[in-house]
Length: 73
Image 1 (cartoon, helix red, strand yellow):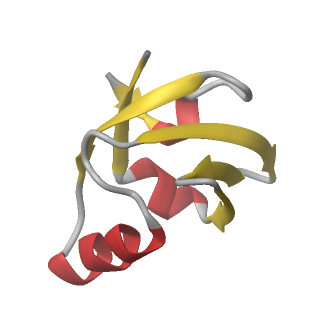
Image 2 (tube, rainbow, N blue to C red; image 1 turned 60 degrees about the horizontal axis):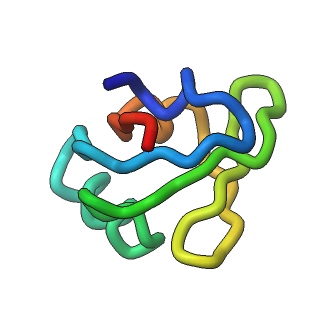
Image 3 (cartoon, rainbow, N blue to C red; image 1 turned 30 degrees about the horizontal axis):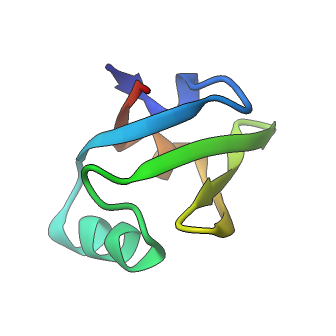
């Protein structure tokens, strides 16, 4: 398992855990980041990530991405 920031572009990952305060978890949950869900990194720009989650492309900061723990599928 690793933070989402270490995931390689194009590979599918399974969301294992979402850390941070309740407010942060709720925000990520509303964006589609749920435990057991699938996420893949599209690209990385200056540490910030563009990811595919639930059929949508979302840009998230490096800080947010570090709170999302994933495992390769």
